[in-house]
Figure 1 (cartoon, rainbow, N blue to C red):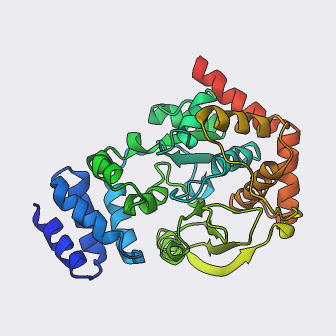
Figure 2 (cartoon, rainbow, N blue to C red):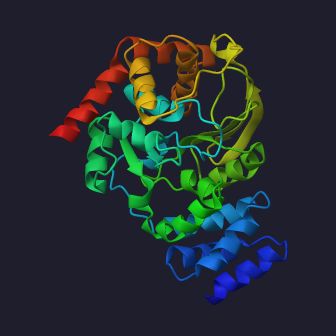
Length: 341
């Protein structure tokens, strides 16, 4: 076992917390594939017993960033948006991915970070089934981001070292520290983020990490009904980061966006075919119920975070207009045409 990793494991199993340097060094060992599986399982298990501190997250993120395959875009990072969340929470539909597409149609360059899901119909599988490439080269991703306004960043292609932990993560079953780290390591360097977390206790350390990384504008979300995105059935807690500082902690109500509060959550997708059907119905205007309201709500947040100086209600109206005018659908068609060519 590498010395830095052994030291880190001793700290964690002694109920201690890691320094930033210890976190970076131990995650570096994981990314380089030098940690035995049994030790890695113990390390991940110890981390799962508590909420990470921001200094630990920062160290882990630095280890990822030092080994990341970046997207060579000319767009400044302070303009780029990501809507990637941690996962690990109940999923209604791929609201964060569709919200990123809406924001992109509204002029925000969106580098949507994501991965395959344990369910088999997460964001990656769904947009791939819709015809959008999830396996593009970094150069092609930069082209799509600059010319179309959207690219999908398939996490394993940009963080190959994380594959060393994949079998242990799968065996453990639930979310691990990797779920919290992933959204903080956008390969296009996005400094505008809407980041939902599976546990409200993660909100503060994740927001502090975004601030330390110099986020231009970010919102960390967790709904009162347990979602890692904004809900139409319950208030949604948020922490807002602006120009590297935590500036606000409060909660949204759907009514703030001109959206009625729903009693029943939208019926979740059960298969990949369901997920694709839901996404296409929302984009072409056939679904006008609770799912549509949930998409509008999350898209409104993404539009404001991307730089639109609008009230929440006006941002929701703009999201509706982008959907109703078929500008979002047109953007998707441009992405799928690029895939076919």
